[in-house]
Length: 257
Image (cartoon, rainbow, N blue to C red; front, top):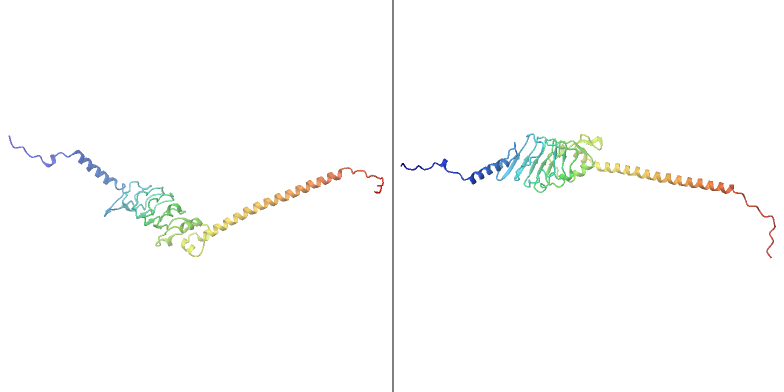
């Protein structure tokens, strides 16, 4: 008999458990980045690039270790509540150049402490979602949105930390006062204009009209009440006049002794 040859490395059996671990590892790597996006990693920090991918909603499989998320130039129209709640390490969020019209009041929950920059420029936002943005400490970009300049917008801006590099590009697409349409919002506010004072004046006028209405109703009721009493008194007097008078006695009254 000839010598028994040694088995080649390729013919050695591979433990089933090892192949399963390798498969799970590969699946984990494939699921760590949203489809069609790129997720470069540097020193444990992940940047997720999903720009111009035709996305209509925020991906759900964004890595929890992401520090940068770019969702610009997509087709997002709404940011739902809790869209980024698992991204506690996120530092920069780019949502610019979409068609965002509405933002849920809890859309950015979980990001209040760490987020440094939120870009919402070049969207279709008309009114600032105060509940969604008021708790953020990040710099916010809101330029090139069809904002409606009114008291609610002015009050919301008092609580936001606007990005100084783009604040001059925030303009009034529509306004409570027509003379400010198309003008930079900051320029209007710096000139001393207060949209809230106009709102309060409108409210005061409405309140005055309402009070005048109630006063007119009270006066009308009083006049009606007086006239009704006068009519009743006149009828009563006529009734008394119509009664026959009592006969007068002709006997002289004897003097009292």
